[in-house]
Length: 350
Ligand code: NAD
Ligand code: LMR
Image (cartoon, rainbow, N blue to C red; front, side):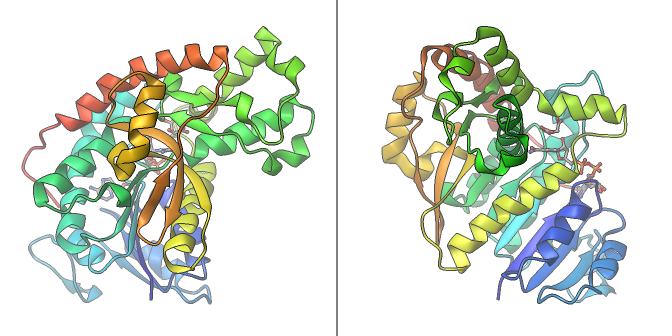
């Protein structure tokens, strides 16, 4: 039995993500939590004949599901009860002209209340954070868990999969093989915002032809498109939000990998994620040496296992261009981490 919770399930990401998780054969129970409309989304998805039994929770939903009430507003806690994995696309998205950091003030509070509910009702769950700014919201989750005595760095993940999907698509297009995008695997390290997103083009598999890597203009444009792919969608949606459908696919893909490693008996699954480096203290030393800073969080390829993070992969060999970009990524990441770590939430409102 595997229980998954989506928090923010009625939103632009939440709805298609809930659909994709409803289709995942490893999921037997799916709880959809949101402050609006989650009961309707659950009723809709419940007609799809897959193993996942689905329930919608609002802030005042009791432990018995939609027909029961909780006057204390413990709906989030009730939804989380016994969860094996919680994925969190709750919070506001960007509009044109905004940075992800502009979302901090609203989303930090939302993340804090959800983290408190998880600590109370599902302290052993794998927690997958989508809410922006990921570079700061993941530290917020960690700090709440530390305070509640439930923090396990092996179980907390910032979802950066969308950067890798973009890298595959844009690289395949530049090398002239757009229909083979899914074959291109490009590690993306650092964080999830602008220059903190560092695609390691020199490590692409299959390799990017050297003449493209040596073409300064082409390479800069490709790197920038991956780093600022989110802006492309925000601008195209012109005020109606940011990436939702591609993010739902990315979130479902990453959740599926975590579930396959933890409950499906698969080994050797590797995926990128923004993590607390103490998840693998030994490799953390190597990574901190590579980045030249004692950062607490960084996105790297992660080997998944039964308990979440089995092992981190060091960055490995990078070229001179990437070494320069790494300095910028680290410089931008450091204050975002500090902002999340030092966030003090107002009293919780579930
Ligand atoms: P959206 O506004 O469409 O949906 C957000 C949902 O969260 C809404 O249904 C809202 O009711 C719900 N919500 C608000 N407060 C809540 C709370 N306290 N508890 C539970 N649910 C709550 O936004 P979206 O487009 O789905 O984006 C959601 C977040 O994901 C944004 O912060 C966005 O920036 C981020 N995002 C991250 C990535 C990534 O790569 N990590 C990609 C795309 C978007
Ligand atoms: C993305 O990369 O698409 C998301 O982080 C949403 C955004 O604000 O760009």
